[in-house]
Length: 286
Image (cartoon, rainbow, N blue to C red; front, side):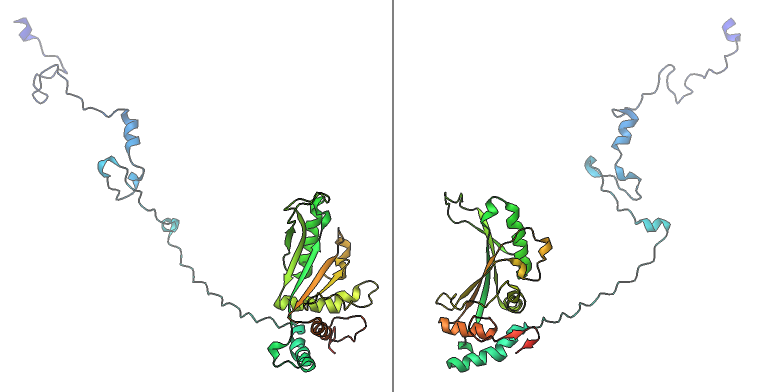
């Protein structure tokens, strides 16, 4: 009886108040993924913040949505005006060498008259010029060959080719494949330009020059001559030259005999000893 008169304690809820659950039983907790909240954050794809990102199927990470340009946030930038395309300049063809013009206007008619050639194509002409520089001391000083090759390239206007020994010679301490010189082969316009500079500028600068020997033909219409120093060409500055070396100049023609080749080169302007000099001068054709 005493228990019935006691007032009920505050805070206690009658049985069955919480959804009809029996007293003393707690609701079952939902299972969490391993690693807790950190695992949940790690499991979120990188592009989840982007709007419209759909969850990937099969647990794969969804592809990132393309972000807008920076100018969209601050306002669209005005489109730049299209640049006008520059029209390529018309490249004028290089003028023909003056020695070639002199050959067509003066040398060819004179040769045709002297030897009675049937047509202009039968008249002999210069086909190529070969500059050869032998550097035997290059095996002891490799820098010497490099410096002389640069000088030869400056003279010819074309990169020279390094020549190598074909056989080994024990007496000269030479082995096969060793670099021993350089050469350049000139044709067409460069050939005529070089011959023009050789005859009008370089040959008159040779010390004690008394004319070229007319006996340097090989019997097939080719002429060879030698220069003792490369400083006879004005392109080479004597103050900056480290090594002095000579070179051979071979002029190849289509002449069948030495007599025809001699007359051809004389008319072109080669100053042969004991023969009348013809050809071009610095002022123009004679």
